[in-house]
Image (tube, rainbow, N blue to C red):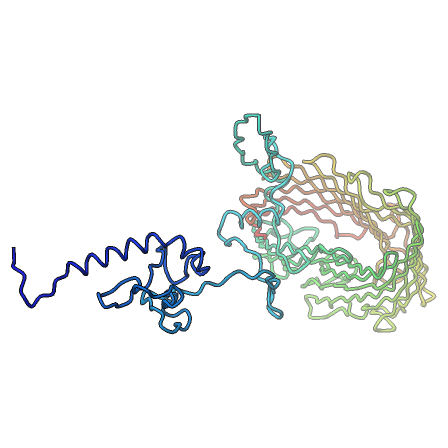
Length: 576
């Protein structure tokens, strides 16, 4: 043990004094808490520790209070914490970590301002274009998903109701619906141009023609090439409508000179709905054909023959309006047609000017119809026109300008979408300015009927009557009646067989000319019979293999003008 140095003060009295002061402080702590209200709550500057009485320096060291000093004269307890408030005079400073000021919640907070003015709301979330949800939405918009499912009673688009909480249910596995088969899986899809649907095609064929020039005694047959392009037009609008068919082709006889010929036909009809009961009708048509060397229109003479096939073409249009008064319908159209024919050339170098017979026809067509039932609408139609030729006299010095009048009565039918079309009959007459030409007259029959006998078989019937111009001396014109039928049957989904049958009678009327019904007269009468078979084999929607056979036989009162021909063709049809 280290001895106490004489210079070291005796610490025993000091320790005893401090122990006594500590005991006195503990004894008087409850009384000080009652007298000092500041200590009823925990001081904010101290964290979980009760404050101790301040120590002061006495004569004997650090004590709680000097003997004999009253309680009120003691220095205040340290309530100051660094960074809180200004320290009180003679207050002990707590140099601990400063307390962070906490923000108390407001009693009445202001309302949420929401989206700032001027900023648009965010768009809804959309799936990626390559995701399953986006592809499904696209299929639904195209109508590929239908509510009617075959072979499955589950529709994934209809939510399944949840079972009650106390019922156990096995999860239902959705079954992918089977795709509904198409009515015609090999039909062309067409090309969309806005609200129009076009179905273009191109046909290339090669074969053999036994009589390319359609003469009485052909010297030889010829290999034949045939090319054709065309399209069908149909609108898909809510109010208006456009529908038509256009085609143009060319026949090239490789072994017979002068037997090449163009051929084409087209028609377009449009409807513009002005109001619910009023519409504007507009349309047009064209045709291109040739005259055969043995035609009655070509007059070569005794020692010469025709060396070309004159081209005859016509184009026309109409414009009108239709108004409905409940079931009564009134229509009025104005028509304009133009017809031209090329000149005929002969072996001796001479020319027959058939172009002198070019003419323009202007007319009107009033029509009244009444809807008896939704599928039967009888009508009465009249045609009034005037035909004006470019030349006052034709090649034989006859004045061919004329006025025409035709009256027809018929009905349009639509029976359960099985039988649709129109059929009519009437009488027509044409009066000429030249007194040497008698009036051209006769009954007229027109029909266009389509009968869908079954989903695989379709029957079409067409009939028409026209009053044609001629250049034959003393002949006013030709009354031409034609009728044709077509039966199409699908042997397989991609194999179709079509049979055609046509018959045409041309009767030239004039002085010293008798009608076609009198076979023993000196009149000019022609009867043409045509029979054909066509087979189409669809490889895909776009490629079709076609083969056909066509037979034609003409009987006429013109000496040496009868002919018979057979045409065999095989080719490829490309369609879109």
